[in-house]
Length: 175
Image (cartoon, rainbow, N blue to C red; front, side, top):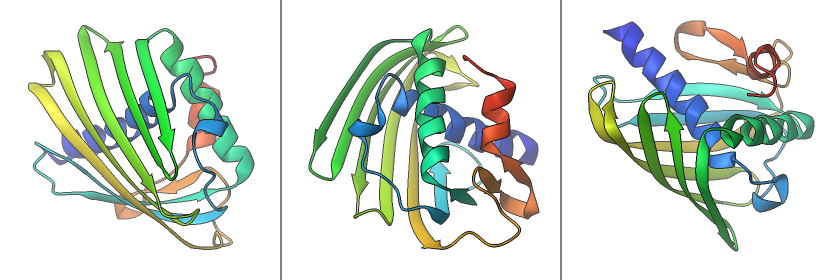
């Protein structure tokens, strides 16, 4: 079961990022401070209580992630409403992934450029992976400069697994 949960967590993180950003532009979201971010994430209904990852970002990486999210959601989402009020961004989206229609209400609360909390409540119709709804939360905090062994786009997952989100995006251009 662990591979399913880890895979579900990674998939949820990646989908959450793509579906939240959607057709939004960088101007819709407050900028994050370049450097190393610690992200604690949990997805309701999984056996594993939470996932922790670290991600090294710079302004260019964030811009690429926004651009990728816009491209990825273009063919998947028929509704994407974004509202920003001060340091809070609310996103309501309806997207299709495989046979499921995913309706998501997301609230992202920023604390300056060094922390944010995301809560995304999703409903799946028909159910996806046996689930009709889930809640994904992310608590992210800037922890300092990126270490020498990490470059922008590197994500350090649990058990030392390292991936580069920029390489993932480049492997799937225009999605």
